[in-house]
Length: 212
Image (cartoon, rainbow, N blue to C red; front, side):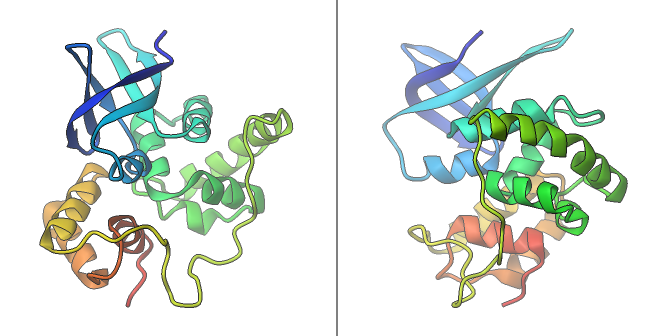
């Protein structure tokens, strides 16, 4: 199995990354949380990986943090949750948010993830609750209860902002990757766009329906 890859990032188009490792290009699918982290890097990067073997393909999934990889692998054990939904969850919610919502039984928050309806959210909450207790108890994962989604200024994140229409397009691309139609994604982004916000904040607000 491939535990991690270190190389030069030559392509980024959600959800696909291409990493050049000594002349070999590895195609890796990653959640938006990993793309946010990679916005800060243009040279050599290290990506933690999980190889998913199917009858018709061997797929690599990549993550910026060990917590993301652990949660992704744990989600795959839930009945009815495949890699696509697991990536959508990690793209829509931070590891801390997801764990907190499962622990508190916040089904409404879980249904904000594209493709997750009420029944799926209830199944996630029931099945992941005990699994999280095990991995948290073993020290593999830590999280804090989510008190609020916004700080006093209404900002979701404090990373360096990326300005301009390119940011809007990247946000739309990310939403379409999660399953939204182009027109729908554009409308969602336009309704929350503010040039002072980071790409991550715009996507999060669009997904959560936060109005400025």
